[in-house]
Figure 1 (tube, rainbow, N blue to C red):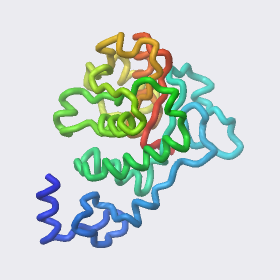
Figure 2 (tube, rainbow, N blue to C red):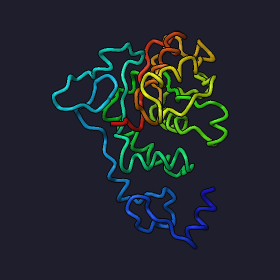
Figure 3 (cartoon, one colour):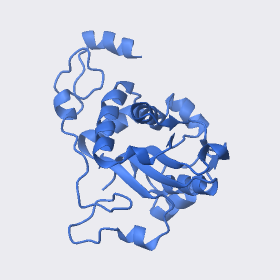
Amino acid sequence: MNFIRSLLSLVFPLECRICKKTLKTENLTYICSECFAKIRFIEEPYCLKCSRPLRPFENRICKDCRKEKRYFKRIYSMGLYQGVLREAILLLKYERVKALIPPLGELLLKYCQRNLKMSDFDLVLPAPLFRSKKKEREFNQAEAFAQIIGKHFFLSVSNETLLRIRDTRSMSSLKAEERKKNVRGAFMVKEGEEVRNRRILLIDDICTTAATVDECSKVLLAAGAKEVTILTLARTS
């Protein structure tokens, strides 16, 4: 696929999706380096439990996290789901621009180095896709980033431990309560021994209401995991 894009770019030069500047032939990410450099890590104030952006005068734990039981220990989100980061995630997920995996992975590593104590984790797991959706997309972006994190920090990674056993509706049009119902019972742990008494870092791309990662955390804890921390590329505002 990348070879075909390279050939096409010689005849029909690609433009940056953000600023429309012509890209260099070797740049197959659809985003120029200048625009990509504008991606910024999420800044305070944000909820210290779920990373939801807050107003300066709000309690440091958001109202949802104070009101509801959360199964995850904490969510860390690299940036806000807007601007360049949003475009990059959409290109990766829906247009299969896999050339974005290395630069996004590098950003995620830098974020981890600054914000997480990686020795606190025993196992890295990706948020799973249902098998038909994974076949349709040809890959799971969460798996790609889990491998990058695991390799860099010498952590075990498993793509087959946490499974999505039921297809679910698209979450984009659902309200918070509908999202919870949508993912209830959608996940299972294949091998309990793999997670028992282990501190897990669960990787996903976007966090909105945290319904998906919370349901995953619930299932992992029920299977014997010691605790579950979430790491996502982006957090909606």
